[in-house]
Length: 116
Image (cartoon, rainbow, N blue to C red):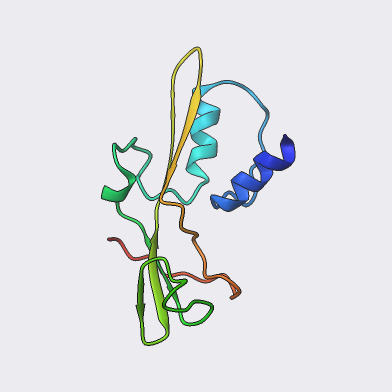
């Protein structure tokens, strides 16, 4: 179970989170704030209607494997992630995403933040 949680946190941009486990809303918000969230910690009704981070890949994709726009050998897509917390006696963390990564496949991790 711990390996699964670590993997999920890495995929969502939480490279390193150290804290004492508790069920407090404050601790949940601390974890959510360490994510690369693109929704300013506000629950959204539709992740597709939110801003995101443009990811531009000059190699590693083809026209058939690029998830969005492919133009002259460059693949561009938008990564969207919204991590929010709610509750008082029972604290819940909510993760909303469009499923696209924050990085290019098979390339060094670099990205340019562009609001959409």
